[in-house]
Image (cartoon, rainbow, N blue to C red; front, side, top):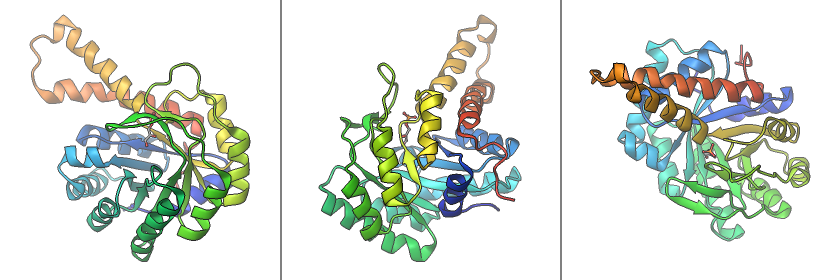
Length: 288
Ligand code: 13P
């Protein structure tokens, strides 16, 4: 089994100049499709699980049971990290770690920086002895995800340096203009700020709101230390597009078996995922 934390995965990506995709999962169809595509493309992959998605699937233990079972029965050998996306409390991170997640994000970015650091450090102190990696966020990523909305607020360089040094997080998501969900217009990321944070913080950087960011900006972000890019909306949109087309086709009127409705619609997930991985450069980069 190739269930790993994100440490080596992200350091290798930084060194070799590509980024690993975090693709968020919602159910069995998503987890299975994402794992099979990663295997087919020989790419490392991070399965992102938000608190809301974990609840939807039945809980953190259900998620881990499902992922471990899929990896075994589907012969997944590429490196896979199972990562709590936007954990809001120490308790949520602890519950995910106790269930076997290999990585967690503590998103305490809505708190003042001292509290963000304190909470991140608390999670690191629990996670690291168990071999679990920790991501933190500084500033505010815009948009809406899982009912949480934010207005973009750029990360401050000194806060980024402090949280890495004082909380000892493994990777950092500095908010620099990206947003969750569809963009209105073309996003404009703060590349000078990203460059400065990369040089001073010295940990792999994470880019949230990866859906809809133009390819040239993705490449610029990778060149400035971004090793992990989160994508959720694009996969959902492509899945929904295929699902709508299937149901709208009159020849499918007699179809009622969920496997015949959901199964073919996973083609949208696959298409969107491959498109992003081609830009991220992670194809063929699974650890030997
Ligand atoms: P998108 O839904 O905009 O791709 O963002 C995903 C994300 O950042 C998850 O944390």
